[in-house]
Length: 140
Image (cartoon, rainbow, N blue to C red; front, side, top):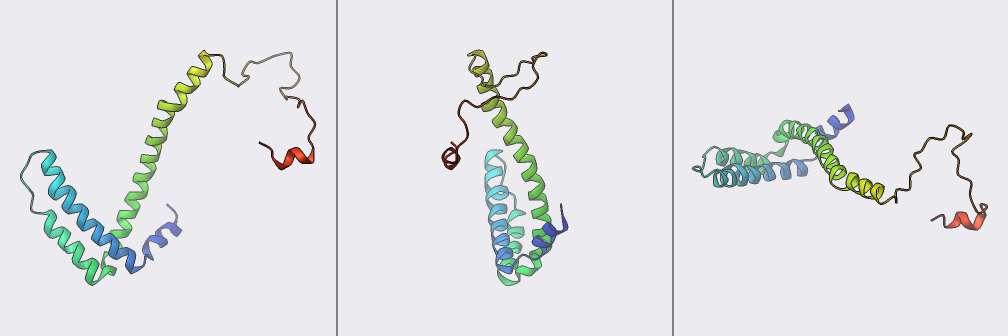
């Protein structure tokens, strides 16, 4: 992470910090206070409510006090975003791109010319039509 990113997080306006505090308060109550106890069929824990109340109170009264928590959270979110991006892009490749390539290869419709010709002096494809200024206006 570069220093400019760290400085951007550290210089977040108070409105952004206020939103962060209120969202964290709601997140703590909804996820840790209600959703997870419901999923795992356990009793409702008491700790999310006072922690959420502190977040909400700081967000409303003095959002600047949430700056360090905000910076730490955003660094965590950046790292998590990189991991999620890699997982999602890998899944898209495995689910969409690879099967499409296999299907095209089986149907002999793959447009790649991957055969190596030892006698070839060049692999350049020669155009059928010459390039004109009109053809450059709408290349596709």
